[in-house]
Structures are given as structure tokens and as C-alpha cells.
Image (cartoon, rainbow, N blue to C red; front, top):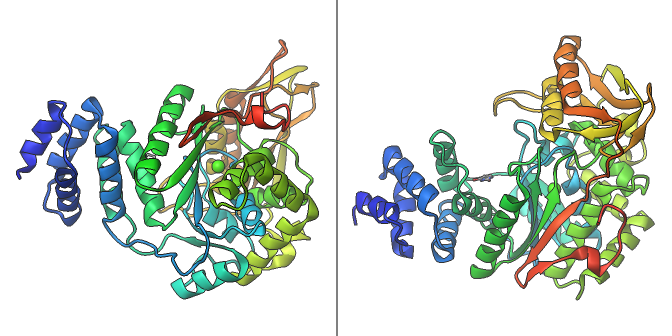
Length: 452
Ligand code: URA
Ligand code: CA
């Protein structure tokens, strides 16, 4: 088969067979299909789309394009979680120990941060001594002992996606639903999970700004999961403001620990419990979402989840005392408080910009090669809908480089305003999509005012 015939077939709106997709992707990964042909193909997909059959073939061909992780030596159903990326999103640090404490194995591969979003591995590395580099044997052994290990990506996982994503980035073809969905799903499947819970973010701080686009992406990924035998649940959650209050590596570890100590009610805790409850359900630990939620709430409030985090930190070379003494985390030299300039209600206009402000302070990477400062970042004292008085603290900056401050202050002033008119706080969950269809967790149990 000639590559040009496949491009023309897709350009004309016809569906490719599994063999045709496999030939194209394997050829591209091996360097036998050129960038210009693949770029033309991606543009054809951008305009003509792909049906579920094609998207599922694309996902599995990509998943098998390089190394795959074999977790079969770990008993139980391996459920993974993935977030499409947000700001102040420390869910993984809470969710891992939460689900592990309930006895469901968490064998997690995580990434590093880029741009306005942070990465779990960077955050964990702010714990003194912690290493995210474990050999395969060690990794499996630790999961079998503790039900929990978090490591950085190793090996040649999904090379087809690495190459394709870079090509899409420079050819205007990132924003294609089948290409995004297969890119995300292929990486999770290659990492060895049997089921997955997806946190699909929607809003100003998310990859997808629009809620309906996020719901479509969620539905596509759940359909792929069902088709390829990985039960998938997607929670579409609000990312118009940072999820937690902290943005920055050590600051987010601190927030995760405070949440596990039970001191931090709010959306970060709520979303972690919801995603965790779905993980227990997919892992067949519980029969219903409510049962999962109840079990996790009990474990969290008992302090067992915090102990689980400490065990993982110790097993991976870190100082577990950090859970009792937050001053062991890297500390920025200086702090600066931004206070409200008038009475009114807080409105966060742009969550991505708040992430970029933290990045400029040194908490994130502008390019893959940038080095980061684990101590710096910012804390939001108030989020959208909060009533404030003039002079009340809104944001605290933690920094080591004074030269960055003027630029950061400018971004922050543009990212939030104080309105005179009362505004509501933002609902956390837009939609939950399961293999059985849409589901409203707000109807299943009352969590708090975030679930409206
Ligand atoms: N994230 C991914 O991993 N892949 C995409 O294509 C888009 C977002
Ligand atoms: Ca998340």
C-alpha cells in the first residue's frame, strides 16, 4: 500500500482499516514515512475526523509502538489516573496514598512539568532525598509491599506519540479530537493499566478551554477505553481557577500534606476523594461510588493515608519526617504579600496566567531544558466568589530572585479582579462519563457546595 493512497483516502473522508493505520504508524515510527506525508495525513484527520473503530486502532498501534510496562506480577486490578493538566493540581500526591491505603495497587509513572502546569515527579523531588528512579524489580516489589510507588517515565514508551505530537505541534494539528484522545490513551495503556480514571479539565487553566469540547474529549476517551477493554471513567472538572491554593513544587507538597492531615477542606480534597472512589470501583474494591467515597473519607480522617505517603517517601529514599515538619521542605528566601485594593468579591480571570506567574518565579519550565526552583511559587488566599475587604491578603509570592517580581506582579494583577457585584463560587464538576453513560455524582451523595 502506498502512503499517498492512505492520505487521499482520509482526505476524501473514508475510514481506514486497522491494517492501514498500523502500516502508517509503524512506518512513521521507523522513519519510513516522511514528516511531510504524516503532516498531510494529520491535517486530513483534522478535517475529516476518525470513527471510533479507527481511533481505537490508532490508540493500540501507538501504545504498542515501543516498550510497554508489564505489571502482571502485581496482583489485583491496576487502575491508573490521568489528568489532562491543570494549575495547582496536586491530586496525584493525595490520590496515590489514598487509593493505596484502601488496598488497590498504585503503580504510577508520572511526568515532569512543562509550561504553566506542574508535574508530580518535580513535586515529589522537593522532598529531601526522594528519588523517582527505581529499577523495574524494585518498583514491582514496592507496589507489592506498600500498594504504592511513583516513578518517572523510563524506557522507550510510545515513541510514535513522541514523534507525532512534536509534528502536530508545528503543523496546526494538535486540536483534533481523535488525535488527542489516542495520544493520551496510548500512553496510559503502554504504562500497563487495566482500567483508568481520567480527570479532563475544562477552563482558562486547561488544555481545553471550553466545557463542551472537554466533554467530547472525555466521551471519546471513555469509548476508546471500552472498545479496547480498559474500563474508563472520565470526570470533567472545572479549571477556571487553580484547584488548590498553592502553585509551586514544595508549596504543593505542603498543601497535599495539609490535606492529608485533614486541615484543608475544599475542591482539592473533594476531587481527590471523587477520583479515588471511582478508582476503587474500577479496581473492584467496592461496589458503589458511595461505598468507595465513604471508605476513603474514613481512611483520610484516620491519618492512615498520611502514613501511607510517609511509607512511600521512606521507601524511595526521602525523609518521611516531612509529614510532621513542613520546614524540612525547601524554603524560598523571600515572601511578598499582595493585598486587596478594595472591598468586593474575588474573580479569577485566568488560571493559566497564575500558572505562568509561578513558572516565571522559577517553579516551572519554559522549555524541557529549563531548570526549576523547587521552593518558589505562590499561594492564593482567596478564590473566585470570596468576599474580601480592602487590605486583606489575596496572594503570597515565595521567591528567590527579586528581578522576577515586577513581571510577576503585572501578570497577577491581570489574572484576578475584585468586583463590586457578588459572584458565586465555581462548581467543581461539570460532568462524569462512564462506560454506561453520563452520571451525576452530585445526585449520588452530597459532598459540599462545590458540587452544585
Ligand atoms: N495531551 C497529550 O498527551 N496529547 C495530546 O495530543 C494533547 C494533550
Ligand atoms: Ca488532576
